[in-house]
Amino acid sequence: MAFPSSIAVLGSTGSIGTSCLDVIRMHPLRLRATGLVAHRSIERLCQQVSEFQPRWAVVGSTDVALPSWPDTRNGGPASQVTWYQGLEKVSQLIQSADIDTVVCAMVGAAGLPATWAAVDSGKRVALANKESMVIAGEVIMRRAAETGAQLIPVDSEHSAIFQCLQAGRRADLRRVVLTASGGPFRGYSREQLRDVTPEMALKHPTWNMGPKISIDSATMMNKALEIIEAKWLFGLSAAEISVVVHPQSYVHSLVEFQDGSVISQMSPPDMRLPIQYALLFPERPPGPARKPDWTQPQTLELLPPDLDAFPALRLGFEVAERGGTCGAVLNAANEVAVSRFMNRELPFFRITQVVEDVLNHHQFDAHPSMEQLLQIDRWAREEAARWKT
Image 1 (tube, rainbow, N blue to C red):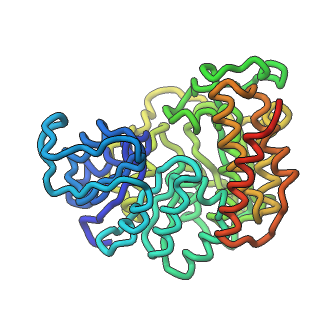
Image 2: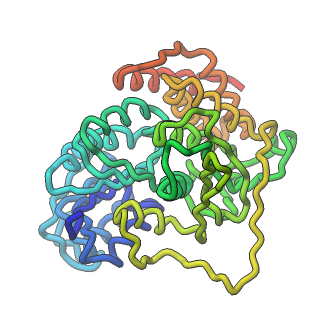
């Protein structure tokens, strides 16, 4: 890789985006933030533009006013920055020759068009938008093989698998083991989960994440999405994927080989490590992520998940097994159900039930096109919005 590498950060004001900019800040001779994209956090985006001086910045929302420059509110002028509004422009910008790597950190299905554009143009993709792979993993991986695009996962679990696979041959793989923190309701029974409020569900014990991902962690739907993502990223069957609950969030995933050897990737929970690994792979220079302290005693637990209390995990394995349109339906129905829960229209324990009901009533297609996937996404959203408790 030639340096400095030119980076487009999609979702720059979110938790992944700001962690990515921490990495770029530490490696100014290796990495340059050429483009920044945010949904509507205009003040924070202005601060980032002032500091990193990208060539362009995009505000995704069309109902906020673009800043006028020079803008002295946020640290000085940024007169060379070209501003755009609306996500339609993002795909065109990231396909330009002056972008080397695209960090896809937008939340939900909204990140799919940009992921597709980056893959279609053969970029290195630092993928934090798992929904892209859940919805269209088969189509994306096929196109990546055609264009030479390199997908390096940023999710801590999939980054860990990617790293562990460097220790052996793919042909010798027996299975991968995704770790899950268990979220804020680890140990709860199905009955206890009936009284969960949005405030309770947002209190993740380990990670500081956005509200959608925090709710998904609480239902363990986040792990279901990761099961499906792992299938497509690494060419696995559902039988080659396992999940264990690991409350300390120190072991990020494990890979088991045919001879019984198990390789794990371990580090303090800090997303800047997998982000830097994706941006600078295969190099491992010092970075801003927290380092292990081996002078302190530690206990690491690995526990079987409770599929009865958290049926989302079962759905994840079923969808990974079937493939086709199932991932798009699961993701769309879940996004709507989570939104309804946050708006207090739906009880917590019904989120997974909505998803399962919509899945069971959709018209399955084993090998859909991208257009068909987008159509089924819209249908599933409408069905989940109509679902009655």
